[in-house]
Picture 1: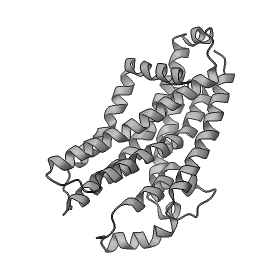
Picture 2: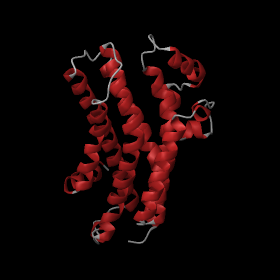
Picture 3: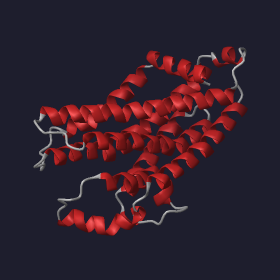
Amino acid sequence: MLRLIFCEFLKLRRKPLFFISALLSVMMPLGFSFLPSNAQTGAQATEEIMSCLFQMSAYLLLIPAVIILASNLLFEEQDNDTLKNLRTIPVDKARLAIAKMLVLLIFSVLFMAAGGLLSLVIVLFQGWEPAGFWHLFFVGLGESLIMWAGALPCVLLVVAFNKSYIISVIITFFYTLINYMFSINDFFIMQPFGFNAGTLLPGPLSFRWFFQFYDHSNAGAELTALLERIHPYFLSNTQAFGVTAMEAIVFLSLIAFIYKRQEV
């Protein structure tokens, strides 16, 4: 499996789409740096730009990038008639699909890491001390896992529709939009932990997890009111990553099963 993952990762060097997707990781923090800031301390400046990474880059850019890259990884070999050659080695299609999905996991982690490191550079360039940065940096890496697992249902649909790129784009657009809207809607972030959209969708799930790691000691009246409403619905590490692991196992199994049964 490790050899398959390594080979799949090496293939990305020949894919311009990979480098374009990687560049997206710096777009939101870089654009945010040109906006007026209300920060009065280094900690506030750090939280502002990391919040942009958590709530904009992860929701609006990372999930679509994972799904589009998945389409490319899964079907380019079929389009170029190279999958038949791989099958003669032989390479099990189910293991090949899992390897591709794990490559996307690595991409997700690197995406958030790159955005976080650029945020650090921006904070330093602006003359602030990046207080609390590394704590939030690792929170961002945790969010990358949630976003990756949250993208897998769409990847499953992409595999099921078998090379219908137009449908893949439509699915990606609506799924991304729904996740973003649900993550800022009180109804979905104030759901009890359980089998509901506020727990199973990556947008509200990640928000209910990472928002508690911000420094709320100097919160204003509006933020304090928000905290009072949503604090009972924060999720622990065990809850957030338990759901993430469960979704990953279920959807990876389904993706591998369907991909294996499809004709080469």
